Amino acid sequence: MVTLSDLHAEFRKKYKGNSPSHSFFSPGRINLIGEHTDYNGGHVFPASISYGTYVVAKKRNDQKVRFYSMNFPENGIIEKYLSNLAYEEEDDWANYPKGMIQYIINKGYAIDHGIDILYYGNIPNAAGLSSSASIELATGVALERIFDLELDRVEMVKIGQQVENEYIGVNSGIMDQFAIGMGKENHAILLNCDTLDYQYAPLELNNYRIIIINTNKRRELAASKYNERRSECEAALKDLQKELDIKSLGQLSKEEYDKHQHLIRDETHRKRAKHAVYENTRTLEALEALSNNNLEAFGKLMNESHESLQYDYEVTGAELDAIVHAAWEQPGVLGARMTGAGFGGCAIAIVEKDKIDQFKNKVNNAYSDKVGYDATFYIATIGDGAKELEGRKVR
Ligand code: GLA
Image (cartoon, rainbow, N blue to C red; front, side, top):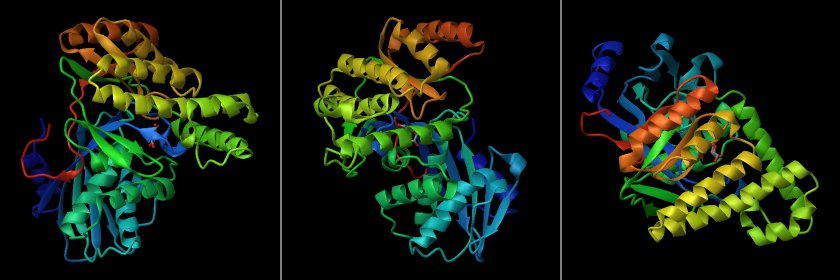
C-alpha cells in the first residue's frame, strides 16, 4: 500500500530535497444511471468513488512548473514555464494539468509563481472511471488552495470540461468533472446537465453493495465513436426542431418523443434519440426509486438502461454485454449495467453482500470463457469529491 508519506518522500527525491506543502485527493467516478444524456441536456446520476488521484505540491519562487507522476515514471519530470503551457503531444498525461493551469490563468485568476506537483493515481487503468477528469480536478483544487484563488467549485468543474473539450480535444459532457468536483461521501448526485441544478441522494444500500467490474478491454476507437453518437443525436434534434420548439433531446418526455419520432429521417438517428429521451426519464425514476428505498425498482431501471445502450445506442460491445448478461443471471443481483462512455471499460452491479464471492466467481467464469481473459472486481466505496487531505493514508 502506498501512503501519503511515500508520496512526500518521492516528492523530496524527485524535486531535490524540497518538501511538499499540501496534499490533495481527487476521486474517480461511476455513473449509476443516465448514460450519454449529459451532452443531450438530460440528467445523470453519478457518484465519486474512493479510487482516485493523489497530489502533493509546493509553490516555487520562479515561473517554472514541474510535473511528475508515479504512474508514468518513464516520462520523468516534465518541466514547463507558466508562459508556455500549450498542448504538446509528447507531454502525454501532463497535458491535463498543463491545460488546467492554462485555462485557470485564462479566466483571470492570478497564478503568479510556478509549482512542483507529484501525482499518484490508483484508478484502474483505462477503465472508464474518469482518471483524466480526476487529474484535472486534482490539479484544480491544488491550485485553488496553494494560490488562494477563491475559485468557485462549479466554475472549476466547467473549466475541467473546457480543458477536455478545447485543449485535449475530447468532446465530452459535464458529468465526469461534476461528479468528481462535487462528490459527497455515501451520496449520488442527480444533476440536470442543462441547468446544472443538482441534488444529493443518500445511497442507502443496506445488505447490498455496488460492485465495479472492469472488462479489462482496451477502449479502442472510443473517442471517435463517442463523437459519432454526439453528432447522430444532434442530427436527430435538428429534424425534431423543424416542428418542435426544443433546445435539447433532454426536454422531451417519452410520450412527446413517441409522437414526433417520425420527424427524424434516419432510422439510426431515431434509435439514438430514443435512448437519450428514455434514459433521461429512467434517471429521474431512479432518483424516485432510491428516495423510496426501492432498490429492486432501481435495479430494474439499471437493466433497462443497459438494454437501451446495447440495442438503441450501440455503445456496449461484446465484453460489456458478456459481463452484464452474466451478472443478470446470478442470485442476489438487483441490477447491472455498463457505466461511463462504453466500448469497453467498466460495468456496475448491485449485489447482495453475502453473495459477492459467488458472484465474482460465476461472472468471471462466464466472462473468461467468452473473451479469453479475466475481469477484475472492486467493491465501490462512495467517497467525497476533490479535496485537501490531512491524513496520511492512501487507499
Ligand atoms: C464519458 C463522458 C461523459 C458522458 C459519458 C456517457 O464518460 O466523459 O461526459 O457523456 O461518457 O454518459
